[in-house]
Length: 141
Image (tube, rainbow, N blue to C red; front, side, top):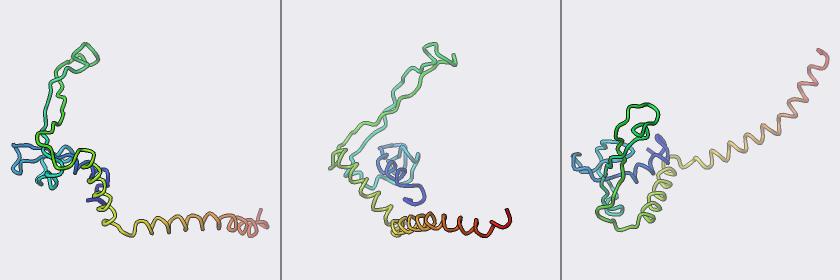
């Protein structure tokens, strides 16, 4: 998943679990709605629940659109704290995601270094090729 969706998506996914009694596993996710996987690190993160608040939209106050109505504001409240603080949990998830990205393609660092060397070689070769082209075409022009 780290290669397919990216590190940012995986980081947000692992931080986005909340309790949802309507789901068969009892968990849902803010990034991937109706996920079939329970929170693998719920003991570290703790249990959060989704709380929806009714809030007036700008169009209800006479703004653009004229339709008005209520907009739901969503927040997540901690019901049962985990063994880590939120900052420690975020650092743990960050480290885990970095490790998963590395495992997804361990040769990525060397591949990027080789790419830089190749680009520098081509940049150094360009003036020589240009001078050679001028030498071949001097009689034509």
